Image (cartoon, rainbow, N blue to C red; front, side, top):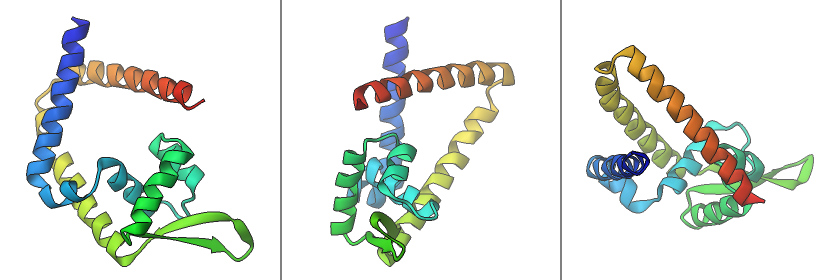
Length: 150
């Protein structure tokens, strides 16, 4: 049964990716999920820095630095420092990055609207079991991420 559950997770992930690629072909073919989520985080945070992004994205600071470098090269974000703190580097979206951020937000809203219809068809008791399981599994994965990050 455990392997079947893992296979279903794999199939779910693959189906979500296929559907996402079909619906948002331009968005997903140009940028990875990590890049899009980094852009989303920069767009939502007030003054995002590497540490905040790493925490929010559950990544190492090194991984965020690599992502930021690619996004900087593509002209989607820019770095800045505050006059009273020359050490800390912050990020903000460029106008091109803002366009991509808004495209991603629209795609995300469409995804929620599409899949919530299915979730409405699942009885509340089953939804609670699914939610409890997913929370436990996500906590387990977060702990593994922390272990691997050390």
